[in-house]
Picture 1 (cartoon, one colour):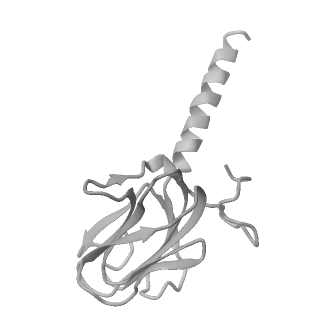
Picture 2 (spheres, rainbow, N blue to C red):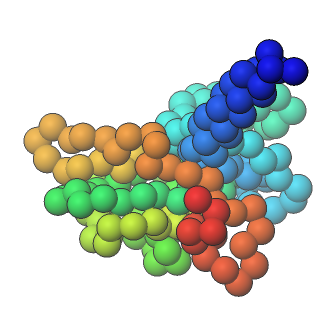
Length: 176
């Protein structure tokens, strides 16, 4: 019996660390249509930096005319000058706490923009919507400290929001 206790403790520690690690990143709802409709395939993406080129985003999906809605809960500290680096080939838009901060939701060749942000320290709900209408699919969002040499925020600042928050804040402290 005493030999079992260390194994159980080790399993709880390793399992807890695995659970915390798998809760990081973005939740992506991938739609096989260009307009965020239909039945999505949902997966966790550790970061939002994709260059699919002329490939499908996953098996069973079209290689163009698809769309994705990603969500994360971003924890902001006391960074002096925070910005988002947002790029896409075709349409992308980003909302933080319900406010649109970047809107390029139209067909375009790849372009990336630095979007200055004025966020208070704490958790913020981020939603990014993207679509690809034809070849060369690219989507990129990175939060970073602005400067001559930008410093990306570490991946442990990104957490998955609640699955079904209802009326509640998807990033409220009950989830953490």
